Image (tube, rainbow, N blue to C red; front, top):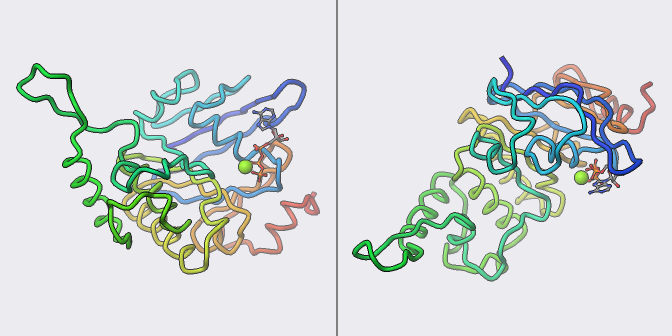
Length: 247
Ligand SMILES: Nc1ncnc2c1ncn2[C@@H]1O[C@H](COP(=O)(O)OP(=O)(O)OP(=O)(O)O)[C@@H](O)[C@H]1O
Ligand SMILES: [Mg+2]
């Protein structure tokens, strides 16, 4: 049984048809690469999975439930996480706060005073997550804006994992990174896979896709035009599907 099943998804923005009947299934713990030219509809498709964009037609099933009409918060509660290309981190705030951004644990004193943010707990939980991922961050007390692009990507992943997701969607996580930082993001994807978390990786960097993913799905003009087992394809074939030289 699939963890995620998209059936005949359609989405237009005004007169522009961006998704034209997308069908896609992802199994639990599977890592798939989603590739396609600029404007093919990749980011839009992912946002129909998270619920940021309602679809015009079609169905999104997750974990054997029709989630098509659920809002993003309801879908996140069911285990769908997305790390956006811009990461949506708060640069002025420290690493620990960013990992808990928007859902800080609170505590009350004597049960009467207004609740306040439990910074000690944020710090200890954030440190646990950083340790679990085995990532190297100089200190969880540093403002995120002072970290490298790769370290920031790591923080965004750590943040996503604290929601205990079943599916993590990553939109171009390695686009702006140096070689060594790319490797640590790919290592984190492998770690997620080994923990049974499904990952959809959107990337223009086919090397990264071939390294991290078992399956490669090509989107072209709003339709899935190829769904390939990595072992049975190669970069030239994937490129030919992306540019439309393959029918
Ligand atoms: N909110 C929006 N309103 C109107 N048009 C949109 C909106 N979002 C995306 N589009 C259009 O939908 C099409 C697909 O965009 P999308 O961002 O999904 O492509 P993509 O495959 O992610 O491309 P890239 O690789 O450049 O990120 C584009 O033509 C884009 O202009
Ligand atoms: Mg995009």
